[in-house]
Image 1: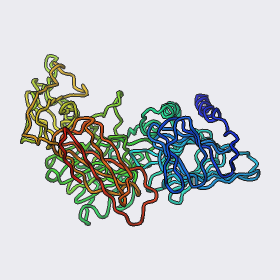
Image 2: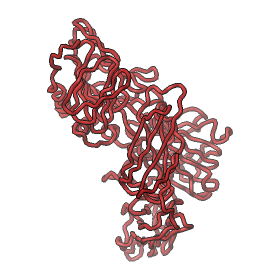
Image 3: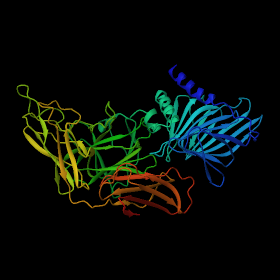
Image 4: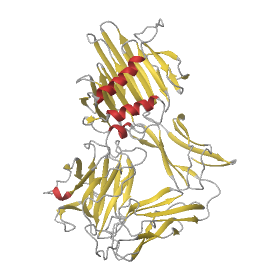
Amino acid sequence: MKHLLILCSLIFFLAACGGPPDTGADVSSSVRAEARRDQVQTIDTAGKRQPLAANDDTILHVGEGVDVNSTGSALLQFADLLIVEVTRNGKIQLKEYRADDESALVDLVQTSGVLLGNFNPKKEINRRLNIAAGFAKIEVTGTRFLIAREEQTPLWWIVGLDAESKDLWVEANGVRKDVISGQARWVAPVGEPSDSIEADMDNLESWLKALQAGEPQPEIGEIIWPKADVLSNTGTLTRLPAIGEPFEMDGVILTLTEDGMNGHPQYALQDCNGDGRNDISMKMGTILFDFRRVLARVRALDVTVLNLDDPKTGLLRVFDPAQDEIARRPILADRDEYEVLDLRSISGMAYHYAALDMTAGCFLGFSLTPPTATGSDAPPRPAVPLPGDTGETVPPTSGDLPDLTVNAPVIADEDSIACQYINDSPVSIPANKAVYEILIDGERVAYGALSKAIAGNSNGWIRSRALNLPSSFTATCRIDINDAIEERNEDNNVAEAVLTGPAATSLPDLVVDDPQLVSGSQIQCNYANLGADIPADSDVWIAIYVNSMTVLVEPLDTPIRSGSHYLVRTNLQNPLPEEFEAMCVIDFYIQDQRSERK
């Protein structure tokens, strides 16, 4: 009954808009477009844009369309056949519209954004609504539905709001699947439409209301899909999978690749750590992970390995739905040491694939680790108990407890932050129990778990990666940030210091890489600040051009810190010319001083 009430509220919104007034126009080939808020533009057949003020309306003809920004909203009314609302950087074009007493055909192209539709023709006539949405084709014969393009990942979502079987279809890569009420499917540049997903309709209703009010919202996949929670190890394997043969571990599809790291990989099934479980040992090998069958959003990946070579001779990489690399994590463990390789996504990005490369080592398992109850990143989760996990090497005496403390941070090697931790107790602490972080001016620059047991009355160091340190900053070190260790003193886990970095350049130094083509038809620019901090509202802009035509101009209104790296992507550019030249430009002015790189 709850879902029924939600659907009714969406239906009420669409029905309340009513039909178009009698304008005298030919309703079989024209559409009434109304701006529900500012930041709406109409686009004519020559590509010329005209602003449409809030509450104003106009008539669109075949070949024309509308484009709204992140807070804009436009309503399109096709006589009494169809009502469409376009929001959240949405762009839509009318390709064909024919309607009479016997048939109705509407053909739309959706380039981006969110489309909420109510297609309600008479049942006795031949009717069809076709929507080309990126690499997906949607066919509707009479239903209420939602189509949404994510902004940070190349995913399209199709949701049935009031759809019976065979009312709503989606096709991609030659595979066609239907979508019914309360269900959703996503479509990626690679592969067929996803399995049917039970959408969280409560969250969807709240999300839609916020969008219609012009409020910023997370990606749709973040709110209708649960966060993945899978813990799996290789102990269930009874035989070594054939090279190139996909095999499943708790819903994740893995493959031992025949190419490996040099074309001659070696794999074996053996108990590497003596815990009675089979593990996969590998030399110059690569294991691929495919998360598409997991009916949840993968935002965090932990892979447990035993390294049998020098540090930095192995690597964990994660990829988006278009198989573009998002992030990577080298193996830092010494030879014969264990490590949990942890990656956490940012900006709403989802992991669809991963790859583990090892020159020599063992794969023990993986974890798709959900966030904590407060929504923050959870610490690394080992797939199997590691040495030191099963108990304390020194038992407590007289009720004694461990006592972790951390000393004030210092600058190491002129480019990183280091902090000494101390266990001021005879009681040891198991491996992977102590989770730490290092921050610079409140921004996290290091995070992880100590992979070795901390013996009683011992000490060690935690350290960030190499950084471009500002001239003056506050550094903070925290140990046991998730309060997983019961301690004698819980108030000495944080230390802070104001530090002076190496002499910084007097000016910022923005650099931008060559543009990249990602997700088939998006242009991406990676940029960084190699000089001094840039404060907010410093008149910084980035622009992307295709064949000298501007496709993106975006102000960078937030602080751009020294040593920080960023990326910006266009919306889907559909279609791109067969041959084109793309250019990224970044530029800024601060106190009448200018620095620029292109």
